[in-house]
Image (cartoon, rainbow over all chains, first blue to last red; front, side):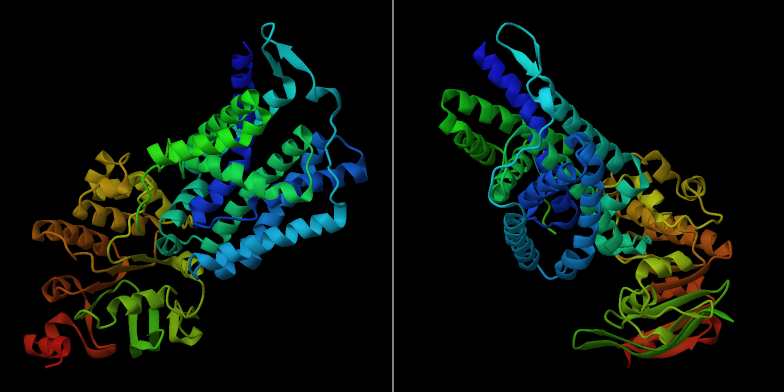
Length: 290
Length: 232
């Protein structure tokens, strides 16, 4: 029964991992840019939560009403002011820019908030749970995060496949020049995509900060989780991202059950296995050479 | 007044100069053809009109307004549509989505999904398929339909017959006659001189980035066209 419990907790953890990964997947899917600062932006959002809660005294859940819009705006601004300048200059410049951002964010957070471990407190909800059987219990908080993760994926799926904006995203990702011929402002489209990615980063950061302690240096570790989630699920597939999160989550909880030291290692092994057996990911399409 | 007037247009790809001072005009309601050999600068010219290649503001005027150097999406919004060479169908979009995205700017006008389907019934049958699952000829119809969905005041067509079987080209040109018969001002680029002469009111010939001939089909002789086309 302990193992069943580990699997259940892993599945729920997968919702958070899917939130980690969605923004990374979105930015890569539309602009073919790997945002190396992705994990640091998650931590930045968590600290933004700390600041909002500290200044206003509201619950971190309410704080999302500030954090998510601020992250949306930040995403739009970073794309227009920074990434847009290097987009058409090959693979390396965007990597260097986001790598630089990663270092800047970590050090700025260190300056502003020190290296202490922080946590966003929401009271009893993090320990409350629903008992399913004697050994299996579903925590309310992981359940909430999981549901938010699923809703984010469903929402993006609808946005991408049911709206004019989603159509513009897909067309611009396919062929930016021809998208311009449709009257699409590709720079604006890219920036809106990054803004949405950053909005989800805002959610991910605050939910992470409620779940565990965090400090300015743990961003790269979250990037790794996000990266493995995307690759397991398959690039370009939103449902794949959710499944990838669940698989990685289960791997982490099962590994951690065997021995806490094996938690991350099991995740890496599952990631490598998927990479060996299905390099395009479980839901991925083979990447076209263009 | 001309709907499109281009004055002394030059264009460069890095160090390579593709256009050397092209001046031409297209009046409202006209169907104008541009012919010329490979590399004569025809596609570059169309790209410059829609702002995909940089040009000085006064070099391109649309409806009297200077549009040279403006962003492509603004120029498209003013009512110019380009059906690009090679069709450039969006692979991730279905046939119907490819058409709908043509109407992205929401310009009002006579063209709608229903009318495009009327013009190309095969697209309606295959509307749920991926755009690139269509045959070459059907993709060309889709690209033209996508251009029409923008309800353009000026329709630019780049090599719509390229790489297609003669029977398919025949169908495409029959559709084009229906489109231009409707009064849509059209500027098209074509390598096939015979096809171009059959459709256009006026013809320009490009040779190595320069204008080598201009006239009405009936006023031009075969020898004149051959000389302007090949430079012999």
